[in-house]
Length: 170
Image 1: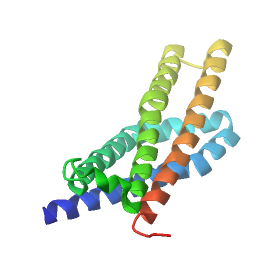
Image 2 (image 1 turned 180 degrees about the horizontal axis):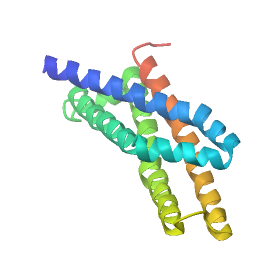
Image 3 (image 1 turned 90 degrees about the vertical axis):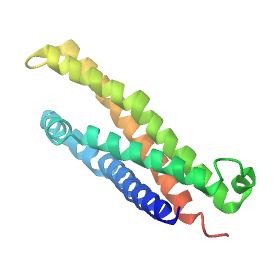
């Protein structure tokens, strides 16, 4: 189990760092720049999401993070039989971080992804410049995506903080 634990921790920490760092970076820096660019910002986001496949990559990274996190939790709690672990300082911090990360994952899966699919459908249906009605719909949907991304960033920042401080008692 020693090598499994090392490998799981390596994958979990690396994917968590990329997922949280990428999400926070996009929420704090990329989205405001895209908004400031106006219509040109939409082209930039299209390049980032379609050509570079950022959403697919982030889905894979976040899924790997959740899967490895659950397996690590299973190891730490003897397949969830050691419920006393959850009442320790370490267990509580890891659990709070886990809930925050699961919240971010859920927002991404149940809010951001379907909203992005709607945006893509409207853009594809327009076949050219969107009509005024489509432009209004796109504005509402893009605002919803931006808000969900910021909320995900806060969740992931909380997960990082709690999980990184779990080993330290105050």
